[in-house]
Image (cartoon, rainbow, N blue to C red; front, side, top):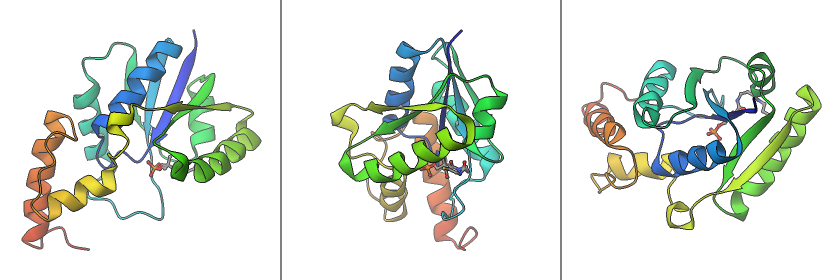
Length: 166
Ligand code: PNS
């Protein structure tokens, strides 16, 4: 069985992520979505919340599993018997960082990284922009899965009240 690990922060998962994960599923029998931590990012959602939102968004896609990834992608992929790591590319701006991570992950684990070109109609969707739109009261409902839209709305309100301000 060919297993792929699709790592990311997923803060929160967007329709762009769902598209890439669906495409990965056409290449691999099983896709494990690894919800990780990027130490340079301030998250809106805790790791368990990000896992829960991704599980809700991906519940209808068979052969996709969501797990918390507490550590290195390379170690997580090896532990889960992955054949490859899969990442989505929105455009050339993503490439340099993805190349560096792919080379490091191969150095650490010997695993190859497959870079999937997502749907161009979703290339403008990034979690960071979605959060910015939510924070300023813009329309974001068509950029994220329905369960995520609800959670974002609520979190944006909480942050406005100051309860989640850093
Ligand atoms: O969606 P993001 O924020 O680009 O995802 C980044 C993530 C979580 C995949 C990345 O920060 C990561 O790989 N974190 C785990 C630690 C790790 O493996 N670091 C080395 C990467 S070469």
